[in-house]
Image 1: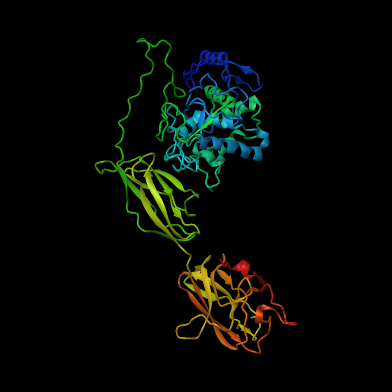
Image 2 (image 1 turned 90 degrees about the horizontal axis):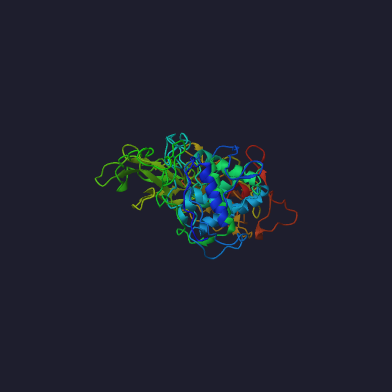
Length: 581
């Protein structure tokens, strides 16, 4: 049947008659049905809502009630062999379709008893966000701008006070459903997943959101191959008969067949468009608790009068730096400065309540508090928005943070941040025992040092060790004590040694050649601290291991693999106590 079933069901106000008509129309055409199933598994046309076994993931936010067309995309039983082409409605954007299937595969491995079908994720994704606004996502699967539901302030919707300090939804007063699968922040805090393996859990990423939705639907001991458990899972996502009916329709539709379309070309439900906020009341829907217009209309009962629209605030003309200075931090430390921008209108006046997205764009392990690479903040009355605290990782060098008006094409404000290596302003030996060796032997005692910065332990500090001459301007010595490289050959400089978590470093074993005398070992740290250690090579010194050629003489005492530390307990070898990257 070529005709399209284009009517929209009213959320929370759909009568049994309307539901029955919808089911009858769908059934008569051979299209996906909207049959509801009770807890016992018996179908019924009217649909009584089973009790959900947990709170709704979306806070029962609005959803899009378009039903699938009656002409099916393919014959039943072809869900695994997707058609190459089909109607616009049957197409699913490539990245979004990949996310649904990847989530199914992950749950098949992690929770096989759940039997999650990707078509169920597709149905929910279609109803919640039109597959991330028709697949408007970047290469990693993240939406180009956040998808936000209406403010859950109790006016027509659930009352959910802020649980994330606006981190995900940009609202520090109330929560809003976020992302392609429309999770409220408190639910995301429990169920959020890293579906694309980038180390973050982002509700605006289709891979993360699809995997989180899969885990949520599989909660408890549900088996989604049974109708009763599938219904309970959908109702736990959004507790509404009409919601279940709509999701069921799309689920059956996608089971009959679909096809892949390029990202950004998928069909978008009316009212969703390309902005950040779905319409609070999409055309043809009503908010929960509101009264639907009576049939027939007319002057006697025109229905509830629409509320006058508030005067929209000034439109942002751009962002500017609001006094952020130089961004520099030592590896592992927090940046002292916090990035602040100011939103202005065309006349240069500050604008409040403008959503600003701060994004770390470069290859770095620095992150905002909570390990996030992106943060959304609304401007205050003075037009300012301040990003969360930024913490440096272990990777040194420069990276970029961009601030942009969320969902806008206005030029962003870019900031360059620099991460410097950990530093030490002092380095000293942990012991004071004289370091001696016989010619051609190894030094019996190891050299262990501790680095500090402003009197505190300096962990992870880079140290260079060099055997130097006695000249006024010392150079690397070509005789006397030496280290061995990986091939057992003598070397007299070691670079990129690092102190451990306690600030200490035990150098690799030191050997002596046949030259007697007093020699010097210089240790320098990142930060400029220097220590010179005296090494003596004399015939009367105890012999621990021979040196020439790096091979021991017969009868010589082999070099120990560990040596006593200052506390009397064996210390780790150089391979575990010092990094020689």
